[in-house]
Image (cartoon, rainbow, N blue to C red; front, top):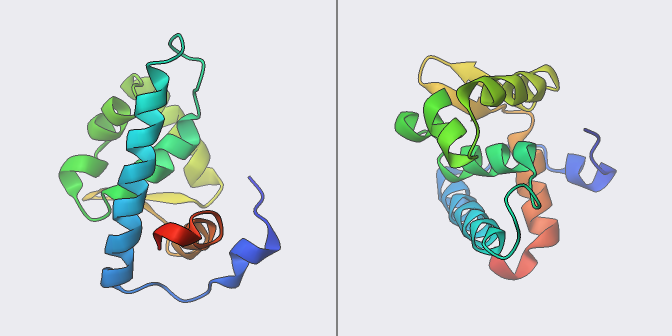
Length: 124
């Protein structure tokens, strides 16, 4: 999972106010992704890693939404498959597990914010 050099340019962690704005944007992106799934047969628009990352950004700090069970349900996965994907994301340094649930790593969070700034400038 390589990122473009531009996305690595964001080095400081955003404030809670800024994170709230990006969390709302992530929820909007997730809603649009769910809406377009009704157009095609199940499995045609699957991007498990991105859905998990979006969900973690959208619900950052909410243990009820970042538990394994909640993430599996949000991504429409079995818990076993969710663990497999979260383990891959963790091995790449994108997510980490805390007692309160899964979260984006402090090193990846600014990169994800950089992605939103680049690809959704009208929304931020």
